Length: 340
Image (cartoon, one colour):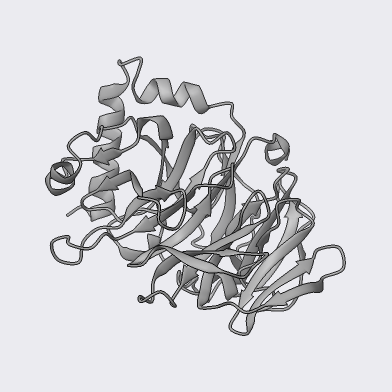
């Protein structure tokens, strides 16, 4: 019997084949994005460990960056200029916990092709380390609060209270706002924003939300939300919003698939995502197929999904490009990652 993920892959690939004759379908999208930089992601190797890989946005030219069978590696994030890569490394015998992965193991800094990788500290240091807009600092989040660390010296240049934020922070491209997952807005899984100048914070989504990230312009955020009112446990969907008090907009949903890891392309025209029939993106196993779609086509609903289509009768059916299985993808338009 096929797993939920297997059924989703088969359906998506079948849809891709059916659309191949349509110039406005999947093959047109594939050709459109092929030369637009590189995607980095963690994926299971044939040896069973997690390594970092890159591929073109159409899924071609997949290449292993790390080749470290004694380690598991994940959470790759390109620097704003695409020249460097942050990622975390844990011993192979350990498993990334998708609720604590940003605090596990060692944070490393490498060139974006995976070379010259160096640890920035000991295991557990620089938790949830993520890039500043200028690539000179990293933002970290620990139980004691936020810290901003200068990369060249590893000195903490600013500390401030976390105010209920506890994971997955991302620094806005304009440098003024943090978005992250918080538990101080009525629910334990809210997505919220914090103004760095004033320290004021407000919820974007107050129920069952996670994996937030920014649009390149720094005004809109993209995040995953398991919307209330679904039958049973429900399915996590991809949404966007311009901020607190702004009505959210559906990006992608599919019954039978939890959608996570939304990452917007550098030109704000496309979005990457992962997710499958198992909660939390399944990092303990093989990961899940990544998807890519145009934001101009949103909202898109995959599969039959009758309940979702009744809620969003104007939603389209794609196209959605099926990419290799991967976890926590990121995208750069730089050509540096493709240089072995």
